[in-house]
Length: 268
Length: 170
Ligand SMILES: Nc1nc2c(ncn2[C@@H]2O[C@H](COP(=O)(O)OP(=O)(O)O)[C@@H](O)[C@H]2O)c(=O)[nH]1
Ligand SMILES: [Mg+2]
Image (cartoon, rainbow over all chains, first blue to last red; front, side):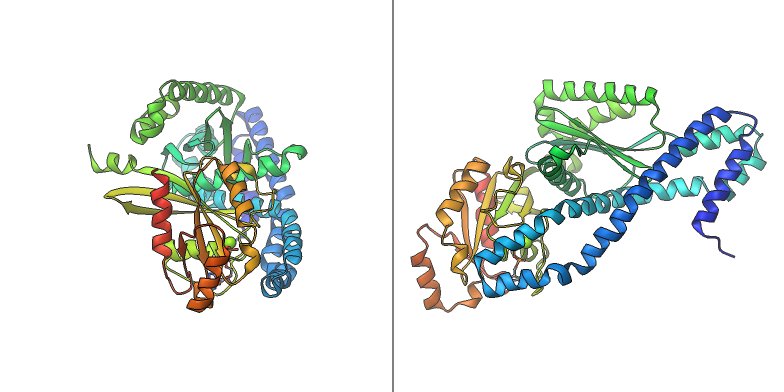
């Protein structure tokens, strides 16, 4: 019988909890909280994405189609402006849809790996194979912090200057362009509402953006970002930016920049 | 230098398509990038970025094409969209006068926002007008039109983007 994913997830937590009952309990509790917090966040965002955005996407022609076609058919400028007015408020929501879609693409393959690692079978296999404290290793591996993608992007043009990828095969030029567009839009539209794009969380996937004067650096990570890792990453990013901005030839020589990214962020 | 490095050294340029709602910007890009045309209205919300590598004077150039939604007169388009562009195409619809009556003002605004000196001017949907009608439009438009195109019938689309590419190198 096939179990639902929620079932599996509950089981996974139970198993992990059992495994960790004697050791590392505090560590697990904090990780668990973090994980649950993530899920809560998702719960908050999900209805918005699912209902509003999907509804808008599905029913876009119904809601706005008439106005759009009217504007084209009747060719009256007034009604065109009206359409733009009508469209603008939903653009923000569409932007969120774009973010989700883009990040889903990036995170799909990554989440697959995590799900495999996090499967009941895998945990049991490890449990019976090794000693009891192997659970720590499982946990560490499951929640291990990994840099998945790095993009160094020219702020204005959105052109990609350099990148690193652990394995995904997304079109980095497109991601850079869209991310820049989304970023500009969000900064422009939501600046008053305090919505920035410095951190986008999606499932186990997190995208962090650091702005510099002429470039920005976007880093996609998975796993648990502890305070310690956070600080180190932040330092590493600053160092990388300093190197690049001191010698701007890096920005036009992608392979050299890619080497520096690996040296400063991945191997460090 | 190995092939990978050569590819990575390819010049990349941001180019921009602007113009009123429904003039055919998205259709032109679709035609140029995918060689497809659809009668359906493809609504562009916010911005869409497409990519195409073109060869110009024996040099490969990676074009990142930004498709800006809304009427160009709408100041709500984030100003940042115009920044960092190496060339821009202003598209109007030859069959709808309101898309080109304010051409001069609109161009001025695009020039100011983008910092570009020359904007490629394209009149699209030429398939909807007869030769005589097109001449009337060309006369009416106060500025020099660079190309008349049809995304539907794939006329001059490639040339329009080549003109745009040429602009990026000036
Ligand atoms: N007849 C004709 N229709 C076109 C042409 N280009 C676009 N269209 C139609 O015009 C409408 C608006 O096109 P679209 O590309 O979405 O315009 P945009 O708002 O400027 O991006 C669509 O219904 C297209 O099918 C063309 O060259 N000829
Ligand atoms: Mg469009």
